[in-house]
Image (tube, one colour):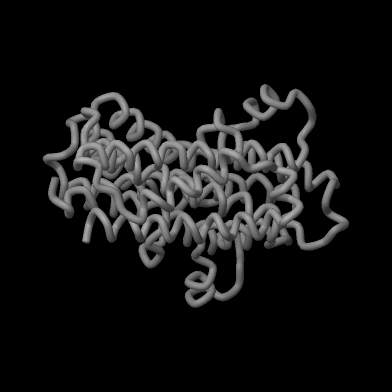
Length: 312
């Protein structure tokens, strides 16, 4: 496979996963802003922080307001990680590698792009935002289902799968880190009513509320939420599950190249081992924020190593 085709597939998947993440992020901010009160910008500030685009937003808008944050994260063309920007970039990548896609993949993505043009300014206002975000999340699910169910288990599939889980690992760490470090700056809030609903909102953001109660069978505990999203193998958005998939795709690619491996394989294996044998008590003892920050750095470095090894 040509390196530019592999690169296009990798980033196509990353942008579709990022689209889904930003939609979930905005959904959490919308729900939690109701609990926090209309005058409190903390939830919208945290959404910017979790998206990694806070500095760029400040340069353009300055003050944090719900309308400005929604516009920035949902449809601003100046934000390459906005929902509409991610969809447009994913489609451009798909057009460039059209021959490597199945017809169902192209249909799911192209139809989403064309149908998204019907959304107007009013669809991104707070009153109708939830419905709009649900539609975009559904498009990501349709794309994931299309490639999972129609692609041959060969190189193109492995790169799409790899992009999906590299992006998801980064997003999960960011979401959890912002909740723990940005939303709770004062000790008085921890364990309170708002704190409880914030953790529920995080579980809702990753569609894991029922999964949490199935696994733990008790009320929401911060350390259990952290364990579910970091160390639990059965949780498909946990860091451990993401890295398990990353290692599997890299191993499959290496096998197709006669066992040739690079630094990205070593880094992925090392991180997966830390997650597989890690304990949540040790993570909290050393500092959850520090652990998540390191995870974000490791995932970014892994992405760069993948690009260097396979796409350069």
